[in-house]
Length: 345
Image 1 (spheres, rainbow, N blue to C red):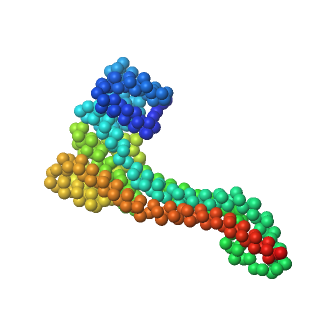
Image 2: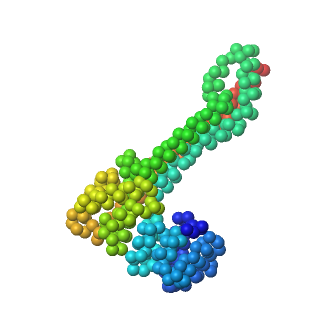
Image 3: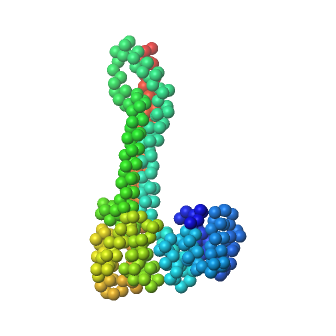
């Protein structure tokens, strides 16, 4: 077991660097040595040196060396092992990694600001509140005693300046609520994705291209669909939920169920299941799989773009409204203080 391990982003960058060297006509030994020579980061340089050592000192296949240094996972190793060339295999792996997380990225982009808006407003008032509170309460008491003026409406408008602990309670409750919702999403996304697909169909559009691409890549490497699903169901880089899902699909395929039925039971989009069913019944599924994946990818991007176009502006406006509400309240309190002072004059 090696001490140093690249993150997924770092390993993808390394694979892209190797692919670019191979594309320019360099052999694999030259490509690796060139990258090791120019690499400035010690961790990546060390990984490259290990790969070179495994391949050329221990006569290890490139896919085995990349797997042992944790640059690729077990499924990616299978893909690289069965492709016609190292460059083609790396290209497949990079394409595979680029296919995931579109749904999460879009939701993050849409909802981050409005979710953070309330804590931002509460924090602004939390730090400013002490400067207003004592003076504000003192003047209110004087107005009530000397002038008998009702200021209850003004007090209600600035509830967040009257009780500092109330700000803390609201902030804590809100934060726990957001954490709870994120935990529930994470729980179902990693352990029961098929439940999430039923509640949020858009998530299933995001995941199905990746699943089809994995099956196509492994089938192209000479494995049957059942064998591919067994490999996927044991890959530790995948979440528990995905492994269970692949296992369920494997049982369905072994029971001679068509692929579209195995996918349909996991609540993937009906329109995509119809395309797969049509191609499967005509016997052209795997010949047309690349086009199906491309179409599903475009469909997914289209749906995500539509959701972003519908929600981005309202959510941004909502965020600004929440922050401005608290900021305006601070300025309004100054005017109220002036009014109170004038009423005492």
